[in-house]
Image (cartoon, rainbow over all chains, first blue to last red; front, side):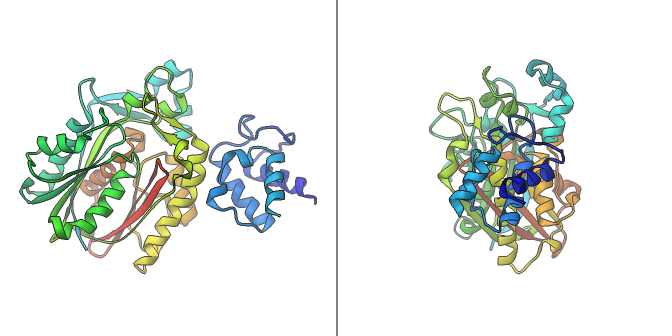
Length: 77
Length: 309
């Protein structure tokens, strides 16, 4: 499974919906995720990609779309 | 080490239900319940001030303690919604309580103010004898300003709470506390000079979901206690969904988190002490049983405090 597919799988798991958001589609404005799903998604990203997201990076904008999550992971690589 | 002697509260009589807000905001009453757990909140009268409510909560606290103000050596008043820049409400509350000459300290921190006040009082009680901590908020005036964000307006209510902390006696002793602040996110929850209150709810939830459980664990660890030992968690009543999430993260039963948010909404710094006042009337401290206080709010500032009967 490639990284984008892994991210989409996490989003589906956290949203409890079989969604397929576009790379730049806002996960929140589109209603795919609500505010309380956001911490769950970040925790799932930490587990899946074996990273620790520091509190300073807990900015909703960094995790607002598949593309932004990929960019965040690129920066952490 | 200081002791928690009594709590007190004051809630204005005017009830504002979800139905009353929903029509005006173009939302369904049940939506408000689903996103917050709130069904109604109290609004103070137009002429009722932060200090007026604080004095009433303080008097309730002193009555419950079975004492008067004569041993109070320090007054700490937390409020993020005071009517003027300075002086803050502490001196007015002191005057209302007949505490002329007693130092009166303001904590204009909003939601975490009462927790910080309690932790400070714990350290200062040895010098000042009894320390009265009061938190009072008239949130209705700072969220309901015409252009207010509906996601903010539905959350908040008015009220006041108080706690008497004594150097010598009380129903429970303060065992440990942890306080933290991080100004990197100060603009994500703030009240500009001209209002209304502005909040990035997602940022608040992201940060609070991690920081509250972590500070509770830190405080318990400092005292050699665990989550399983805790009789009740008295948290800042910010949002029922957030309290449920904290319980889930700590793997603690949700019913151990005292909640009255459905009736009063989020009264910012006052909420934790109002909750404590209600809990102490319904249940109260039992010998040896740990109780955890926790709060998170603007700044961000957050922390936890452990007391044991």
